[in-house]
Amino acid sequence: MHTILVIAGGFALLGLCLLLGRTLGATPSAGLAAAALAFLPIWFVTAAVNMWVGVRRAGYSVTEEAPVFALVFAVPAAVALLAWWKLR
Image (cartoon, rainbow, N blue to C red):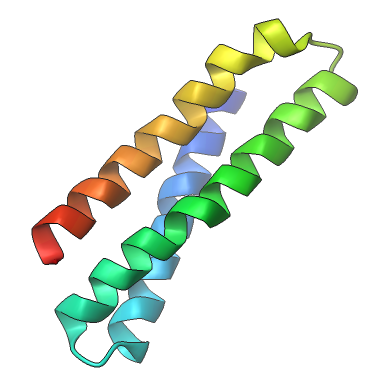
């Protein structure tokens, strides 16, 4: 359940980035494309922090958390890359 909530948080963060990109971009589509790319490093760090918390506080090993990290990062990142590809 926690993994689904974190992925949902990733989509919420992507939506926030896209909203900011639309309002701050020179053109709406250029701003959205730039925001989709800007989301990726922000989400990578956020997903890595989630993994660190799982290892440090929840007691999981890095080997156990690595596939969860990959899933948590990949799903919203794939949507962001698809948005960038469509909007560039």
